[in-house]
Length: 207
Length: 207
DNA sequence: GTAAGGTATCTTACAACGTAAGGGAAGACA
DNA sequence: TGTCTTCCCTTACGTTGTAAGATACCTTAC
Image (cartoon, rainbow over all chains, first blue to last red; front, side, top):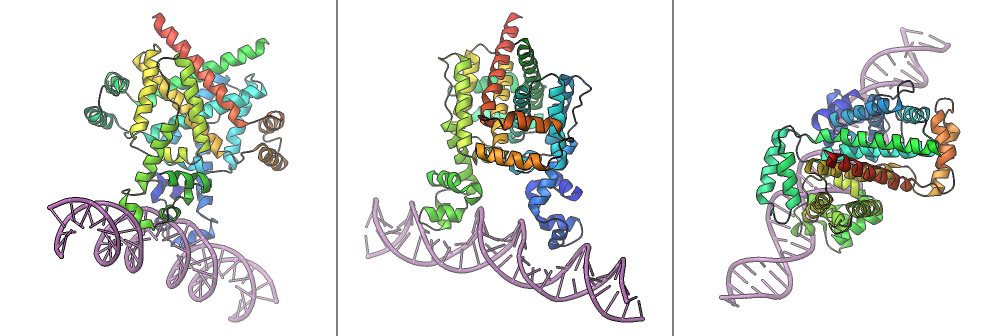
């Protein structure tokens, strides 16, 4: 498992083949099948490991703070293992750490005063934001600020400005400003969602 | 292209191989390479086609309504082509329809009175919700209500209730209620986000 | 001390994949 | 009539996951 994660981290998910994994462990590919039933099992365990890396929310702290911390932690973990979302997306049966994590989030919301239906809404919404954001972040054709700059100018040069006025405006006046980093957008959405959930909870309690 | 989309729709993304695609068109696999440079190009075009299916927001209608409609349209399109998110997630260079769509959303926000930075925030947030939600929806191990019921009872039976109290509570009191459908959660989050954006815009205009 | 059995590894092989290389037939235009 | 372009073909290669079965070692039983 550690070897599989390290390999995917270092050389990308497409480099995670049974032969390369075995090679890194000093054995032949087929030897791995004595320890795992197939490659799917490895991917399943990798996803469960990822969930284990997420900071667990607690029922002691205020729900908003602890869920905010867990969302940021999840974002950071997913970004530092770029293969993760892709693999999560193709898994269908959750492992023990995954279940434990889900339970902790649900418990946190319920202890925070959310009704059962609102808990379901909140959980779906928070996780949509995490996964969707990271997915977009990974799809971006740049990672560092230098790459943004280079790419943006290349795009601006060949994009007909009259056809894409808003696009070029955004690029010039926002993306190309020093200090821009897409990852900063995560907290804006997260806080907007948390505030909205708080409001929804309060208006629910009024009735 | 039409054949590729139909094949992926009908038999899944993993069935979309050059040989099967060619077979459906009555030719051999290698003949396809006269029309496209490689399989990546097909996938790129498929993604661009998907973006073309999304309802374009307009600058005439109120931003909130038109963006709401486009989000719901995007959700529906992505759900009815289950391969779409997987493929979107691995693409790096947007096609013409994709650019056109981005432009329309940005223009809509700008016309709606959003500043440039807030437009960027709003766009990232809205799309995170769409992609993240659909991604979760696709990852769910069930599609129909009957499957939910069957799976939920199977899980409840083997899940130690004392270890997962919130989980079992949610399942029993929410998921297993008649009328439950995960897709219904989409609108809740969408409206929460749209309301939050409106508020953010207003508080921005105050200053 | 030796036989038996389990555990971990090996070699070999296969079907399916994307696609490189190059050949052949049909129509267009000189 | 001859050449060019377009479209399709066959063949072949390297890579993938993994099925099948042989081989080596370590434990345990007698």
